[in-house]
Image (cartoon, rainbow, N blue to C red):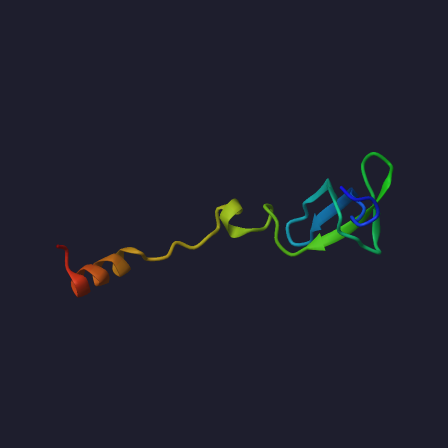
Length: 81
């Protein structure tokens, strides 16, 4: 890697505002706001709208789409050979 052309890769806290989940990871993302983490150190915090704590797929609150009607409509149009 060439020196001086890559962004800083440092610890950052991502916080899901809707689900209340926060996790510490490493990223090149930047933020002006900071948060004091469980280890006593201060890290930049990035607020996200959706994470595994609030996404319907992961929480089990997703809607099931009626695919049976689509299959039947396809078979009526094009038949089964």
